[in-house]
Image (cartoon, one colour):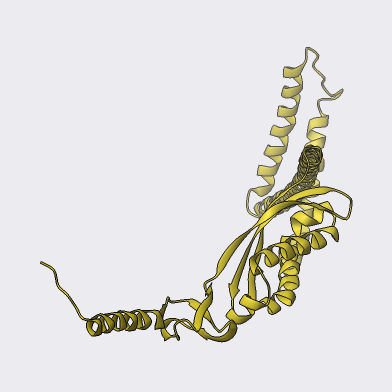
Length: 318
């Protein structure tokens, strides 16, 4: 079946199609965290933010589309020369963000390439001011120097450099072997120092222990001698006290009735016991030239006892 339309109907259909096309072209949906740069007749007009926007078809056009997210950029590896003329293979990663879509569109023909090249240049400059050993210790300082150099230039590109991190520092193999040998020697040195310090401390501890032990022994011997002297003094006092009490009791017994006779008998018994002991210890018996000397000895002893008794009696009478 064929349908025939007059020219007016065809014209209306064409105009309707064009109207729909124009309406479709005039609506722009900008994604979140994105910005579109609009040019009107080849000249910058405005920046569309996230959400719906309207443009004039065939007059306005979307010239540039920028992501406002943080972008990680891998900086290619490069060879850097340190202050002490040592080569280092260095690579890093750069984090930046577009803050001004207009400047990012017209400030540089390719801001990503510009940021990359400037990061490599700043990195070579920062490492060239340091010696090899410092480059391993001062990574934060190198990162800060690169960021400072990029921030100053990236303002004209509508870009904000957030962070820069060195991923790897690789010296030549000869330098690596020398560094390994240096580390090994340093560790061996520390081990020897630690061992010598241990032996020194051991000798100090032994000497201190021997000194304290000698002091303790001398203190013990001193206390033992003091205790022994005090014991001997106490024993002498006890013996003296006992002797005095014995003499006192003997004297008291003499002044009583029969005391003289008892002393006379005891002296005779001691005299006889002395001669008997001499006879037991040897084959020779020693006797006095005159046996009558026994009586004279007893008489002399009794005279002394009697004189003592008379003195005590006269002292007791008023």
